[in-house]
Every structure is written in structure tokens, then in C-alpha cells.
Image 1: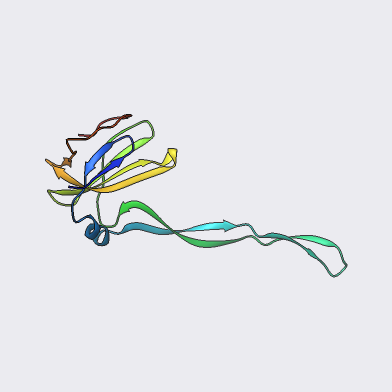
Image 2: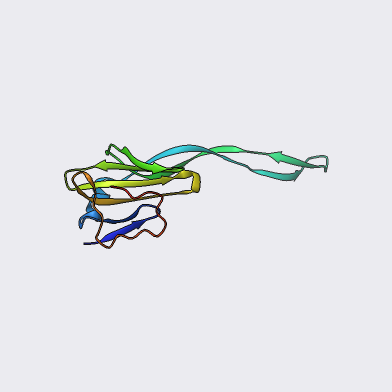
Length: 133
């Protein structure tokens, strides 16, 4: 069975149908207004150089690691790391390790055992903030 490592959380077993789950549950997305600074110099009719301030806003699409249609529950965390789990069924869930303050978010579909992410026997985390489960 395939496994994946998530920083500060360790290794987790990944379901064999994870690619199909990615299609069934695409990443959340949205749009945000972003300021585009557009400044330049131009020569006016009197031969003087003038600064043109032509800033504008445009909509940009963004995605995040959370998946559409899933309900997440906080299951663990420490300091700036928060870990969320969405249970899809009795055997599969989606895990998100969110360390926005550190500039990263990781996620994966995981195999569940008794409603918790299943870890391989070989799980080894050399720098665990906290071991889940």
C-alpha cells in the first residue's frame, strides 16, 4: 500500500483510489481582487515628464488544499500547525496539515482505521511536533 509523509505529522497510508478521489473531490477554489500597480513616466504636451499612476484591480483564481464537498474537523495541532480531517466513509478520509504561518499547507487522502488516519508500521517522524492518533 502506498504511503505519504507529511511534515511534522509522519507517514500515512494512502488509498489505492486516491487519483479517483482527487477527481471526485476537487480542490476548493475562489477568486480574489488583486491590486496591480501600473506606474510609468510619460512626456506631456508641454514636453514635461509626468508620472502616470494607472493602478487597477483584477480577479485572480486561487486554490487551497481543502476539497469541495467535504466537512473538516480539527483533530490535532501545536503552535502554528493545525491538522484537519474530513471523513469520506468508514475507510477513507482527507487530511490537511495547515501551517499557514510557516508558509505551507500539505494534504493527502488517507486510509482510516477506527475513524483515525492509519499509519504504516514503518512510520518514523524524526522531528514530530505531535504524533496523530
